[in-house]
Length: 155
Image 1 (tube, rainbow, N blue to C red):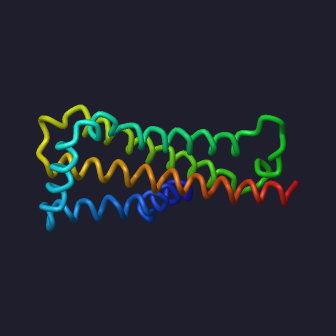
Image 2 (image 1 turned 120 degrees about the vertical axis):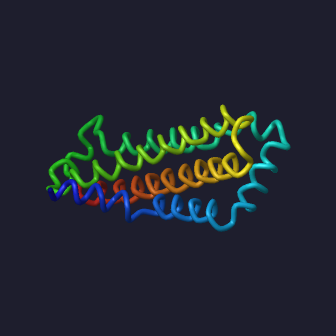
Image 3 (image 1 turned 135 degrees about the vertical axis):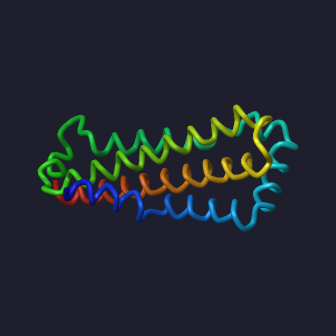
């Protein structure tokens, strides 16, 4: 039960969840802002052609760094595995990777179905995808820096 509550807390009390709430609020109260973003995106073919590249590259780099640090290759972070709360670190890493996956899936949906979706949906999906990618990759990157520093101190 403790682990399930931790997963729920990680999911609901996060900057990613706040971003999704803000975008949902924009859909409800300020739909014109998302229409403007969607219209601006669809007017420029080169932007829509390369739309998925930013979330995919950000998330790919962050996932690579997160696994590089938390999965030891040479036993350099053995002290990290001996930590009793290591499972929390694994959950946070995996949920961060999940948010990255949601970001990539969202931008791919916006990119593939951009002609069938309304301007508000294109704008909202694009903002959500870019925002989720930036937030989740930056939190994974910052966690990697902190863990690297802690691992060096524990060794």
